[in-house]
Length: 304
Figure (cartoon, rainbow, N blue to C red):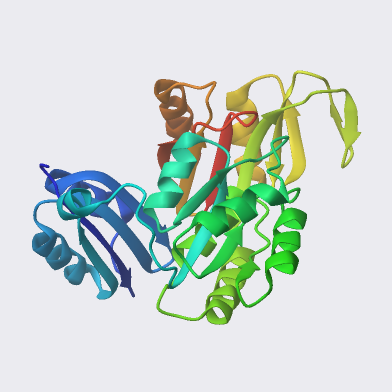
């Protein structure tokens, strides 16, 4: 295994931009994930030089929650069918696409359930994952307003001592909550922090109208692209580029980082083009593109 060490850490009070973190660490390994919220940077990377990675992290701020796992050793000692005792606290997150699922997993979600708009996983699916999982306690991130009720029912059925949930309604809230998960803290402590951080997250999205309607005073025709801010329709138009740009402009200009997750019907080049157009609208915006793989929403955006 070329890069056997799965290395994760958080940098607090960081004074570094995301593109600098990426360009510095990219040559040191693969499976790099960088998440930035304010002055907090969370890093995940597979590398053969974890010490060097941490040295770079230390130069950006104070290091916290350092975790280094030898994946080669884990693979060697894995025993199929072995029963392990449940222990600790973990996150169970709902993800609407393979790309988003991978990102959430690498940011610390131990378990992933596929779901999203029009794909609401049943209560039984959550319970089955929790019962099979290795953690003693779980925090659920539904990441869709239609899945919150299921998460609430799971908590009632399994008990508040074992399960809690953060009422995340979109991807941006889910990522913000996940970024502040700390397995060393209690279920209650994590829930409080993650709920607070989720409320501070800002999101946008572009979908396609399935029927003619009038929403929030906006006339929407079937087949049009519709722009949403915090899950509310704010714009409708004929092209994806137009609707994305107008939706983000309606969100204001107080953003430094826009994370763009493109869906299963878009290509990387199409997403890159839209990202470039957004950066051209405002020189203060840095747009990062991710393969989300989600259905129904050509674009999901997190605004920071």
